Image (cartoon, rainbow, N blue to C red; front, side, top):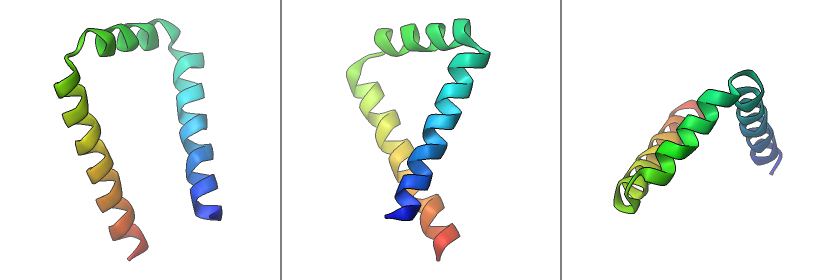
Length: 61
């Protein structure tokens, strides 16, 4: 559970730094997400989730 909370904290730090340092780029990225078709977003999300899982599996294993 501790590892999960640390990972969640790191996500929040990275997201916060992105919006703090590059707010205009973050807004453009959000607009791009809104304009992207749902099947494409699902595919990208699934790919990222699988990639993250594999990365954690290799690092922890």
